[in-house]
Structures are given as structure tokens and as C-alpha cells.
Amino acid sequence: MLPVLPLSHDRPLHDAPSSRLVETSALARHPPHTLIERAGLAVARLACAVQPLGRCAAVFCGPGNNGGDGLIAARHLAARGWTVDVLRLGPAPNPGSDAAHALNALQSFADTRSADLRWHTQSATLPRHADIVIDALLGLGTSRPPEGPMATAIQTIDALRDKGATVLAVDLPSGMDARTGQALGDDVVRADHTLTFLTLKTGLFTGEGRELAGRIWFDDLGVPVDDQGVGVLFGAKRVTRWQSEFARSATSHKGRHGDLVVLGGAPTMRGAAWLAASAALSAGAGRVYAALPEDDGQPWPARPELMHWDHARWSAPADAWRDVVAVCGCGGGTAIAPALSTVLHGATRVVLDADALNLVAADESLQAALRRRVTHGWPTILTPHPLEAARLLGLASAAEVQADRLEAASTLAKRFGATVVLKGSGSVVATTGRRVSINATGSSALATAGSGDVLAGWIAGLWAQSPGIAPHDLACTAVAWHGAAAEGHAGPLLAADLIGAMAARHAPSR
Image 1 (cartoon, rainbow, N blue to C red):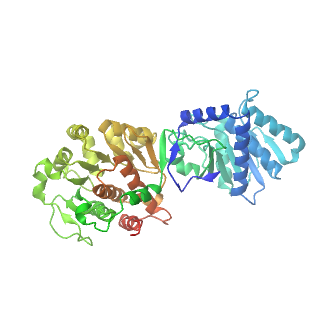
Image 2 (image 1 turned 120 degrees about the vertical axis):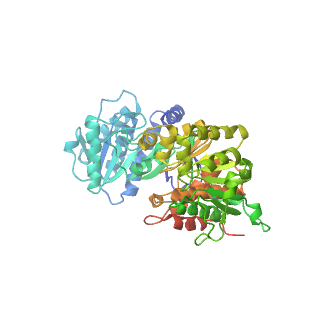
Image 3 (image 1 turned 60 degrees about the horizontal axis):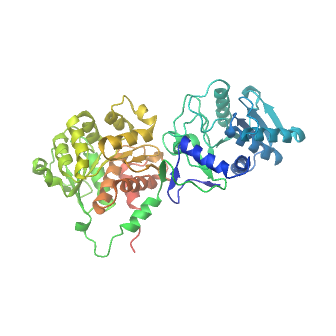
């Protein structure tokens, strides 16, 4: 049993159906009740570890095997001298099942140690205090909002947490969707720790999942990990891998590290283009230009290294953009629309962010131009936040995107033949033909204006230096780098300071 984060290497991710397949295969290779006994013991051990001075536990158990894990954990805690209150909801388990085994074993134990165990059939009779609460109500099979006594039990768990109890969820916080990480309804457990078994579930790492799950732990129960999941969880290891593969030689010069143009920065929004261009420079791009509406040609504040893309080149043939990486959108408003069309028809590598995405969403001709890039073999990376993704998908709100971030990102990737970075907690990277990937780095410190412009510029800056890298791998590297720079930062991280934090993570020269 180990904490999942921070990651030491990429890990496979599973949804409910693929997790069920792994579970079925594992059960077939072990004697009856072996895995549930291991799982329940692991829950008890983690409970003792996170509450080493605790002596009172409230264990909430549902009718399935998830509840069985809780019943076995209750048995082990009581055997260690804890006072354990057990609430069990739902019908009696099927005879011979793992859940029936767990219930029978706890009842037999209670016959000899009744003073250490108290049974409850409704939440109202539970004590108002516990050192630790174990949430074993609902598991992978949950697909609808909790109702009735189940919803009341979840409310009781939250009330105990408000009074200082540590909440440990078994496999998933009850009321959370295993795939999307979103709450299924109004009632959902907010855990301090979640111990998940056999597979890492996608929902634990995106959307509301990280917030609901707290610190995430994994136990393979002695079963070899199945690498053929539906997705990949990646982290800061992607950064060190890129630095190793694309280390600069002693004879490096700016001409070897690519040219890059930021198309954006309309009047009153120049800061967005400045952030993107500065990030590209700090990422290591050789020469960085800014293509600005109403460009006055004056030096950039604090960044004299940035160059101007002469306005006359905006109306030049599309192939004038052929050999540059183009970052389009950052603070561009509608003023960049004519040039955006030219870029889409001419630049071989394009990153679309912010206003460029909104322009594409509102213009069918730009959408067609974006799709035609695939026929030329010209890759594109889109970096929408949820509302921009909703506009591109023709949805009414960002909430519809958040309801299934993996599906939204994958649909966008397929629709436009692009690599998509759907930003937010657990940013999702999707490319048709690749497993969807979820970022494990980052924190709420990134929730500041301009951090998306920094990401777009950093993606392009890395791309300028490594034209042969697959866009999906490039996007994962930049997203991991962006998130890792914010970890451990107290309070909001201003976008300009974020650039410095990212630059500080460059590998030292050898």
C-alpha cells in the first residue's frame, strides 16, 4: 500500500467496466474470499496509520463487496482494541458471496467481543464523535444519486467530518462517479483519504475527484497491475524524460531551437501575449516574435528579447508562417480573425488558445480549415478551459463538459483532428488513437489570470525545439511541467511568477 502522488512513473487508469474485468480475473486466480480479506485488512491498517492515536471508529457499510471491505476492517480494528460502531445498509448479501463472508465473520467476532462492536441500522443512533470514519457504502457499481437512508448516511459522514473525524473512503468516495470524478447528486462523501484497490480509477484524478478523494492510496492486493487501462496518469517524470531526450549540446545556438510567433495581444489585452511569448522564451525557443494588432513597435517591458512580427507579414501568403510554431489567441479578441485563417492554412505547427478557440467555435470556415490541416499532416494542439470546450462542442455550459471531461476532450480531438488539452483540475490530454491521459501535477495555485497563456506559450516553446515529438507527448510534458511548478506554492501563483517557477525546473547544465 502506497500513496499514489507524487508519481514516480506513468500509471494505467481504468473506468468501472475495465476495473470489473481486472477484478474478475484476479478473483479467478485466488481462493474464495482471499482478496476481500486483504482489502479489509489494508483499510484497517491505513486507518491506524492516519489516526495513530485514534480509538473510536464509525464504519459505514453498503450491501456489496465495498461494504464487505468495511466489515472486515471493522473486525480488525475491534481486534486491536478500538471501539467500533458499524452501520450496515441494504439487503442481506447472497450466500457464499464475499460480502456474506465478511458479514458472517464480523458477526462471529462480535459474539465473543460484543463490548468492542456496536451495530446500527440507521444513522440517527450513531455516536456524534469518531476519530475515524470509514466510508464503505458505495463502490464501482454506483451510477445514480444516493437516495433515502444511503443519502442520510453520507450526510452523517460529512457531519462527523465537520466535527473533526478523519474520513477514509474505500475504493471511491460514495456518491462519486468512478469515471468522471463528478458527484452523482447532492450527497457525496468528501474524504480525507481514499484507498483504492487493483486499479486506479480515472475519476479520482480529474474533475471534482481530487477534491472529493483527498489523499489517494493504492493497494494491488498482491495482484500484478494491469497496464491495459483506458487511460494514463502522468506526472513530473515527463519533464525529466524530455530534458534527457532533448538536452542541449555544447554547440547549441538559437537557430537550432526554432522560431515561434504569438498571434494575439490586442489593445487592452497585451499582457496575455506577453505572458505566452515570455513563457516560450523561458521554455527555450530560439527566436520568439509577437504578432500584435495595432503594433506600435515599441520594446516589450522587461523582455527586450522578444521581437515584433511586422504587420505587413499578416497579409503575406500562408507559407510565410510555414516554418514557425504559431501560438494563436492569447488576448487577441476578434482582431486576429483574418490572420488566424492564414495561419491555419499555412503554419505546420499551431497551438490554439483562448480567443482563437472562440473564433473557431463561431466560424464554420475556420473549423473546416482546422480539420483540413490533418490532410496535410500538420498537427494542432488546442488548449481550452471547460467553457471554451463547451463552445467548440456546441454545448450550453461548462457544466456539461465537466460532467464527463474525458468524453469532452476525446470528442474534440476526434472532431478537429487535434491534440486537446482540457484544462482544469486533472487536465485531460486527448488525441485520437492514443489513450486519454490525465495530469497528476498541479494545485489551486494555478487558478489565476494568465496561467493558461503561460501554458500555451510553454507548449509552443518546447515544440519549437523538438519538432519531431508527438504532439500528445509534448502536451503531456508541458502540462506536467506547468503543474509541477505550482506544487507547494502557498496561495495564488501570479502568471508572471509562474514563468519563473517553470524556468527554475530546467535541468542543470552538465
